[in-house]
Image (cartoon, rainbow, N blue to C red; front, side, top):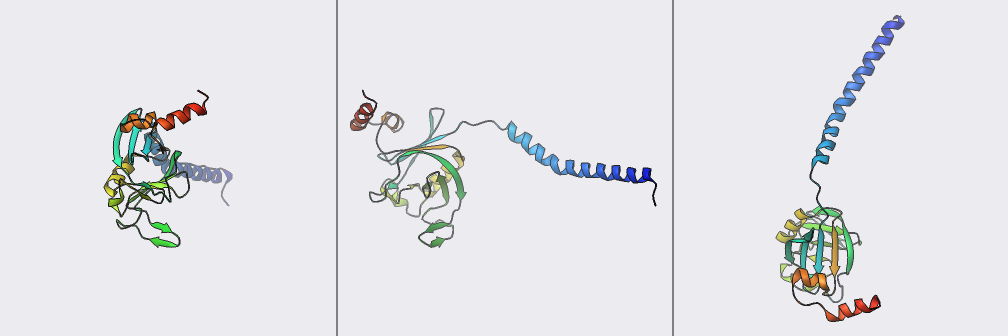
Length: 194
């Protein structure tokens, strides 16, 4: 039987070795956290989609970073107007619809990128039908050419905002040019009692 002082020394050595192993494992995680906090903060970007113009703009701090032509929802399946948030981003997504699953490819109806919104089933994505761009042709999603959605995908993060506008209000007219829809501004004024 070992003396008590030798057993205590062995325990202290074992505890010390465990502490060293834990620190060795945790160090890379701590370094990543420190590096992540050193990354420059970026303001949330806003994606403004004009259904009327069939165009999309990426805006940061009031400055338009890029414009893209888009396809919007067809008359029978219109794009939802409203304020949304990006909840996921998928490179090379598979396509799922009515029990059909299609592997990721440029021939997929959702193209090479999916940017999901917080409205289930709706997103901004590529397409296998580039001739539909500029038309009301989708099932409600916002479609871009694959090369355009790949560029857009790199500009956005989860948490960025998406504003889909059905009419031409002042902001849409300012960003995309052209006139304001007079019926829309009159309706808004009447809604606030002016």
